[in-house]
Length: 126
Image (cartoon, rainbow, N blue to C red; front, side, top):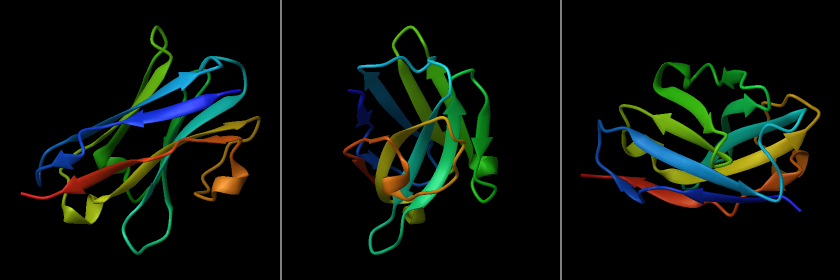
């Protein structure tokens, strides 16, 4: 059973860079055909898919966030991470990591994923 656990700073100041990490247990992020995503949900709004990193290191970003987003992985720690630069209060959200096998997906719908983290709250405020 794969488990995903997000970790992050909780509070970030405007204009700073937000860094989040997803620690994966029960499976390897390099196992063939797994796709590892970040999804967020601002308060009172719907879920938004942000980016994925594939088992082979390929990446893909939401066009609306591409200029500010970077996704990476640390295979030695079995983690993948997200950096979001130049944050504003609009980036306040619960951030989730998720995993899907065999299908490249840009959907934010939880039921489409095989595994979904519990989420971590990030607030952007001075």
